[in-house]
Image (cartoon, rainbow, N blue to C red; front, side, top):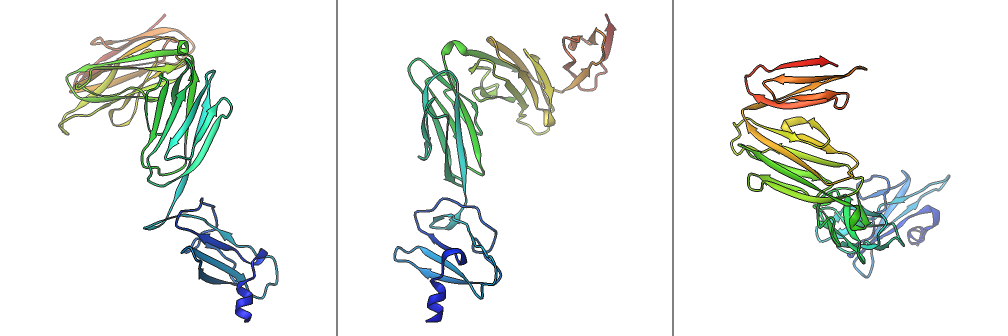
Length: 324
């Protein structure tokens, strides 16, 4: 009888956790083998309820001071307990629209509500759909995955294999606040071009150009990566026309950054075999120009503070700085 009474103690002395097959939203608790943090003097009781769920109870013995128990709720599946993560969608802009998710969980209308969030099981593919109302359009400015339909009445952000908390942002606006960015590729080698925010994504030479629309005042990152079919090929990517700033990254990646988009823009990237990139940076409080021999690299300072150009492997280009 004494054991039965002790098992019935709940209040501040015990935590009762019910984990049913349908799943319960995750609640962060202390780490322990069975998902509960328990005082050292507590005793564990494992029962079974009528629905087949597991009831775990802890009661304290010889309570002589404050004690607490922390429970962690996890989603149950046929293969055991799995993690879940929050996905949050934000909306902004002068237009109106709705945002929903597949699987269901996020569903709100903007501007009445500016965000929505829900938990999804780890590994799930989550699709966020923004539907603009009336004459407005929708564009995902921040999507931790791939986008489709930006600049139209139906824009989609797809997050593949959820592996942690994610956030996405969509903008509803009128069409006059959209501008196009066109990317054209050329050269004798292979490569891949993408944009962030999404919209441009293609392989060269299978595709030679692609355009997408982006909201006014956006910052657009255009990224080119060499993808040689032969691993022994030396392939270089180079933005021969970039209406912004060109940056050279790791493993041959080059980025063209278009800041504060205010008009339609176009950019050109080249994928070249047996070439290397050379970069010249300029600093100081004066003015001048930089050029190369053979030609290819040329810019005026301080209008630009860096220049990049490809030169044949093994060549010895000469760079000349001329003060103005």
